[in-house]
Image (cartoon, rainbow, N blue to C red):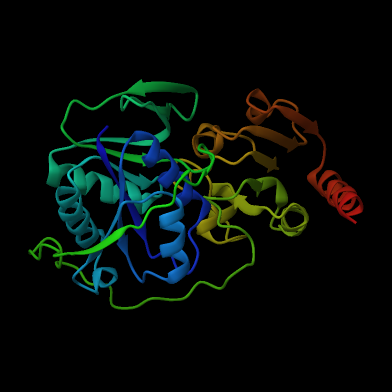
Length: 317
């Protein structure tokens, strides 16, 4: 079995569920090492051992986050070579995809994005055409770089914990990695809700909310869900752009996706069609969202969502 390298970027004190999914998938493909950027906290180190990681690589440079993704791609390329990795796994975020593309060039590797499953022989299954089809693809290069969608692998610790060795990797310094530097950052205010990309439940609102996301947020909080939105809602300034789900926004693959007041145009479908269960609420019975919904409610979201929220609270109480 080929060596596998998993990229973990600034994990904090606790690894996200999507990262545990990558570690579980990596272990099914071969001996797994981790290329970590950021602090290696004790809790994270213990979890890596629990999931059978054999080695942890860390960059010699401590300022990767001061540059754009090219510096991370350079580091990951050096780590992949040190690990002898035949497969590199990253999350399917916009940054993960950009790092994968740059890494593919550095390693002359085949790159497959939007992966939902990987067979033991390296065949990757990915969703295409806005999630309308699932295809099987396999690279013909010595190294494969895959970005994996969250919520498609069940995290499972290894049967026997490991004691991973920690090594330092020299990051190649060239003009491409340091051509642009980040000069300022603004801390995002925490909402207390799950991260949109990792959430098991997403409640999303669109043009139909008419500027009032209250019912959407209340239902999301009752369910412990993340809040998403259509492009129309974010462009109107009703909610921040980082909540946008769709072809030009975030791609999500939750267990449950509740769409409220969203027509379901192809741009929106591209970001959520791989959800396990889709529930649509819309006044327009001809709305395209009902074509892909598992359950559809023809009605006003301002009537339907508060009733659902109240019923959920009763059952939880």
